Length: 171
Image: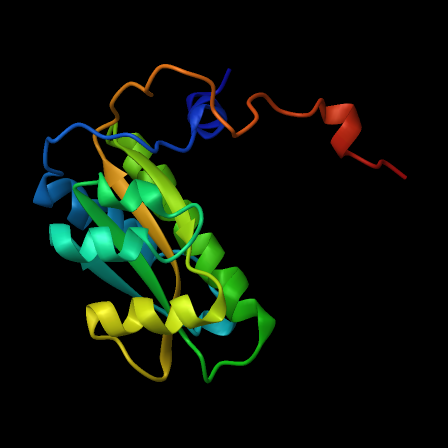
C-alpha cells in the first residue's frame, strides 16, 4: 500500500498523553502545514491559538462533553474562525485545517484529538479564556502530544469502521 494512504488510514484520535512536551520544531512544522491548508477563495478564515498553560487547558477541558482530553495534553491548538465570515465554507475550511493539523502531528508520531466547545455559551467562554474576541470564535480545539496507552476498561466510543459498501452509493 502507498505510504501516504497507509498513514491516512492509520490516523486515530488520541485522548491520552505522556507528560513529554511537544518539540517546538514539530509544532512549528505542524502549524506551517496547517497554514497551507486550502480554503475557499483563499480567505484563510482561521487563526491558530497555541495553549500550553495547564490552567487554561483544564478550563478548556470543561467546555464540552468530549473536551476532557485537553486537560491531559501538553498543548492544544485552538481554531479561531472569523465569525463575520458567515459563509458555511469558513467552518468547512476550519475542518480542513483541523484535519491537516492532525495528519501533520501524526507524521511526527504525535497523537491528537478534536474537541468541540458547546453549547454556544462555551464558544464564548473558550475565546474569553484565551483572550480572543470578535470577530474570532473558537468552536474547536485539538489536543496534541505524545500518545500514552489508553486506560484499561471499555470505551464509550465505538471502534472499527463501516464497510465501504455501506458508505458508498455508486450511481
